[in-house]
Each structure stands twice: as structure tokens, then as C-alpha cells.
Amino acid sequence: MQSNFITQLLDLKGVKVTKISHEDSFVKIYITTDPKEHICPACGAKTSKIHDYREQTIKDLPFQFKHTYLVLRKRRYACSCGKRFYESYDFLPRYHRMTNRLAFFICQELTKLTSLTSVAKVANVSVSTVIRIFNHVNYGTPTLPKVLCIDEFKGNAETGKYQCILVDGENNKVLDIIPDRCQSDLVSYFRQFSRKERNKVKFFVCDMWQPYVDLAKVFFPNAIIVIDKYHFIRHVTWAIENVRKRIQKSMTATLRKYYKRSRKLILTRYHKLKDENKEAVDLMF
Ligand SMILES: [Zn+2]
Image 1 (cartoon, protein in one colour):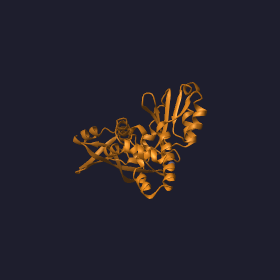
Image 2 (image 1 turned 180 degrees about the vertical axis):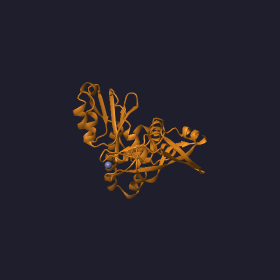
Image 3 (image 1 turned 60 degrees about the vertical axis):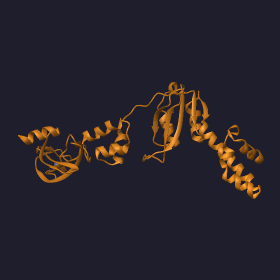
């Protein structure tokens, strides 16, 4: 009777609890199922002949804040045709090491504003498992905004070194993340949108990476392509640095030393400089 309640508490269809072992950091629940007639996957004949048993450890939802493992006594059947096969279970996808409900729990956790690492920790799985589950979740594509910004960042996805982020530039909202910034991925991503939807984009903001510009010309015919200020300024800064290094070479040793230490002088806006610094800059140009 008592074991029956424990079985109900576990709430897995057709599963019986045979033993529970509580450790400091985890709980192991030993389970089994009733034998039943199976259909041979090779020849289609019915068989009830048990060949042997094997134990499989499956991760389940945390129980009483402890990591929880189900230890399933798996039954292997033998058919008269010679085929041997394991029984199948509703709560466990074939070849999986976690219950369906744990996978669902991870999906729910992923909707919260939390890191993959902390989801992995709560669910007692690896970060790569969380990423794999995340990739299986179907999520809709966003609608396109008037101002579409694109940039890449170095993420930790297995799909590529750089991931692309799409942002609504007017409302400062992240629209989507694309797993890779390669052109073929971007093309297949933007092909999902109808022409009408794409025509809504009036400004396309990106860095100076040519594939983005090419992409915008093809997919967003109504958009003005804007190179965003950050990337523009960065290039200007690099250019100024090159000029500084060139001019410094022809300077006297004292002056050269001064400028070497005062790199920021050149990059500061003129009106923001102190008077003595203004003199120094004037001397240079
Ligand atoms: Zn068979």
C-alpha cells in the first residue's frame, strides 16, 4: 500500500517504485514496469519471453531540491526470430537519458531571464544539453520593425563562432538571435519573411561587413543602409592612430615621448581639451 502511494507521487504511467535511496545531494528512485506482451520490431510476431534485464539511470525533475535519478530496470525481450529488443516507455524517449517532464521543465526555465548555466545547474544536466533542448523548441519569427539593426557577437553556440543579433532600433528591443552570421544562414533566415513584411524596414543599421550591406540591398529594398556610429568612429580612430604614428616618427625625441604618453589627446574633441593641451595638439598639426 505504502509503495503504491510512492508510485502515485512519482506520477509516471505504468511505473512501480521498488526502492528509494536518499543521499545527501541526490535521490535515487528504483523503478520497474509490469511485463507485457510485445510486438517484435523485426518480424511483427508477439512475444512475452524475457531475455534479460539491464539498469538504466535517467535524470528526472529535482525532488525535495535534490538531484533525482530514476534507476529503471529495463526488460529485454527475445523473439522466436532471434531478435532481442528493449521494451518502450511513454515517459522516456528512445535513447534518452532524461524524462520527458525534465526536458519540459528545462524549456520552462528557459523562458525566464536566466543563464543557460543556472538552468543546467537546477536541472542537473550539462550546458550543452540545455542548448540542445533550446534548439528543439519551436519559436515563431518576429515581425520586422521600421528600424532593423544587425550586429554579431561572440557567443557560445555550437553553430558558429559568431551569432547575429537583430534589434528593433526604435524600441531598443532584441528581436531574434541567428545562430551564425554566414551569408547562407542569413539568407535563409530573411527568406522566411514575405516581401510585404520586408518592405516595412525603412532603415537597416549594420557595421561595415560587406555581406550585411549586400543582404540589405536584396531583402530590404525600401531601407536606407546606415553604418552605425560606433563602427564608423572606430574606423576613424584607427585612421587617426595611423596618422599619429606616422607624424611622430619625424618629431624630436622629447616631443615624440610626450605624444606617446598622450595618445588620448589626439582622440579627444578639441573643445574639450584644456588650454595647455590645445597648444600641444596645435603643435602637432
Ligand atoms: Zn521476431
